[in-house]
Length: 487
Image (spheres, rainbow, N blue to C red):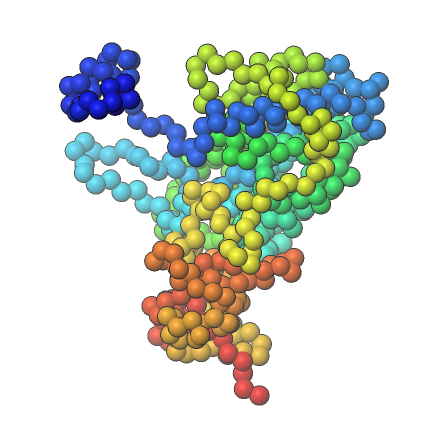
């Protein structure tokens, strides 16, 4: 009204709003999705991505000359198109949000182990293709810790359908991705498809996946081209795993967990929270392996996997057939998606599989900020009070002793540079206080820790007087200052 009738005072009431909505066909609805950008806003990037994918598929290479290319699938056979991604896995699945109770009950309680197990317990690394179950890539689980004290009995008890890795934060970093890739390369060599023909792997822009070293490892190990869909398009249909497989896998794990709890012995351990960390890891590999086999077995499930790939454009053909199967989320009703009319740099598109990416948002600069797993997973907590922490007391590092009294946590001169021990869920770790955290109220300091590859990462900590460790007065404390032993 203000646009069409400038200068005319107008104030619409509820009656006007109701009549206007009825006249123009508007309805009040609950929000279904929260997105930082809409699919329509991302269409230019997605169209360029699919056009480049068509050029990669249809352009001959030294490995696949024109005479060896398939008329439909081009460089990459249908069974060699792979989608891969990481999926957060909780130990307590979201199948306990509701339960049966008496009518009229106002308080409904469900007994479960430590509530921190509702957070990310480990990370699943999934890779799949349009293949039968026996030829499908095994699922990988990355648990917290370094894996140095894992007994041979526990390792032997892991489900054979699952490959287990360990990382201090249960995340896929450069070192873990290298190990997983080596495992996938050896597995691919054992399949009937082998590594002679070229493969196409589609993934997101996680920093360790965009490194030239990873691309070279994939190229040299299994003749694979790695192509990354545009940033922030995982929820728009471009991510094969996020198109339904990840959710289906986790939902099946939840169903298997419910069946497992029908056993009285299992239910007793569950209710009393007496399962050890080792038992949790072993049983989770069994759930994950059974769920993965269920997701990948049979023609019906294979059809689902094929549809997840088709929807993302992973089954792109060289001749253009099947383009109508690409299905983006969030487009207006009746919108016909097309991408062949956009202009792209053909030379850049053909070399895209080996180019380094500038998308580093997933892993910030370790000197400036701390890795933010919560930016990847809504379920992640960085609050130590919500984690399942170790129970044992810390051991004094060689050449150091614990300081009994807590320093002035408000004094920068006192805190910066202090060497400390901090209680994590995987054990006590040795770090150095680097700088003050000025945002929010929960955290107050950044602490630097060495990584396995020699680099350093900084993490936010809540270092308070109330949670300072003392073996006599505060054995449940989370941190303690170290000082060098007098010579």
